Structure formats: structure tokens, C-alpha cells
Image (cartoon, rainbow, N blue to C red; front, side, top):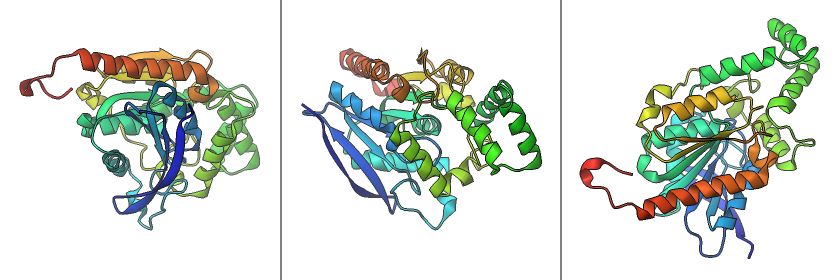
Length: 309
């Protein structure tokens, strides 16, 4: 039986947020998807709805100022800390209980920050092309730029030296980078194109990230959670692809920092494995989440002196 789909708006922290729900018969637990950008709508996370096959209720939403959610006049609210609070507000609105959280790209950074602040809200976390250190991820993307073939490599260098980041030739070279390291499908799915169109229409991405994926000049540019990763005790799966703009070195930094974290590489993927290898992604993540629940149900309750699970 197909999952029932619904949509609407919820007031969280005083603002209207757009959401979409995918409900299978007799849902077992919630999967909450956190989109990247920062600034993208939820659209390109729609393959996460495939997890309803395993009985999960899947919840996607547009963050503050993104997609169909309300755009506040106070752009000072466009922060990682605010997105963490917003995520907890969404979770609380779903009712009691822990949720499985899947964060893509910047959503992976958000997922890690959320796990650090609200560990008792998560059953598990999955990062997909996620990052813990923005400076490290930026250095890795600079390396990938230097590995581009000509003429794209030279075009990027020349126009960046002149500060002409809106020139048509420069944007064409940026597109070549994206086709190599962001999404290797041709054509891109409509939902992926829609997310990027919405990024361009609203100020969140430019103010938090910068003009493009590898030029990070916005307010997140100095965020580095790696010194805190060892405090995360939530079951963790770190995923990505070998061609990812947020490179395998970044994924390994997360895996090495979180005790007991697992890592999976989707060998044919770049930054969007839930599109580039949709069935394999669904099977891998679904198996991880079911395994987490199986181990939790077979473990004796922890005493108050051992901390929360």
C-alpha cells in the first residue's frame, strides 16, 4: 500500500514553516530530513520518502526563509544555532519520542550540531555529504577546483582574481564543477533543479554560504564542530560518494570523530547519492535504522548513572 502524503504549515518559534509528511500504514518511527544549502528547499530530499517502504513516517520541511516557509525581516535569524532550535521545534510538534535524522550537505552539519545540543531527541543520525568543519570542507573543494580540466580550471582562477563571479563564462565553469562533484545525473531531476532555483530566489544561501558551493564567504565560514564530535553518542552512519564536492576526507573526519560511527561509500555517487543510487541508498539507510532499533529493543535499560542512550 502506498504511503499517504500530506502537506501544510506549522508555526515554529513564531514563524510559519512548510512541511510534507509521508505516512505508511502503521508507521513505526519518524525519519526527519534536513536539507542543505544552507537555503535550499526540501524538494531534492524527496527520495527519503522511499523509507516509508520500511514503515517509517518521513517528514521534510523548508527551513526559515527557504522554499515556502516564511521569510523573516530579521536576517540575523539565519544561523546554525537558529536552525538547531527550529529542528527541535519541528520534532516536538511531531509528538513524543526520538527520531531518525538524515542531514544532507549543510543539513549534515546541522544534524551534528543538533545531536550535540539535543542528544535525547535522536534515535540515530545519518549524514549524506555532510561536514563537521566548514574551513576543512572549503579547503577540500579548493583542491577539487585545482583538479578540474582546462579550460574550466583557468576560467575559475581568472574570474575569481578579478572578482567577477557573476560573469557568464565563470558561471559556466561553476556548472562544470557541479556536474562533476554535485550531481552526476544528466539531466538533473526536476526536484534538484527546483531546489537550486529556490536558493537563487531567497537570501539565506548568499548570506550564510556565499556566491557558490566552493566560495564560502558567509556566516558559516568559520564553523568547526570537530573538537566536539567525540561527545556524540547517537548511533551514526556517515555516507557520501567518491566524487562528492564534500570529499571522502571530510566524511572520514566525521567518522573518526564520533565513537562507533559507521561509514558507507556509494561508489558511483557524488553529492546526491539518494538520487544517483536511489535504491541502494534506500536499502542501506533503511537497514541501518532498523538495526539501530533492533539493538535498542534488545538492550536492557540504562541506569541513571550511565547517561542517556
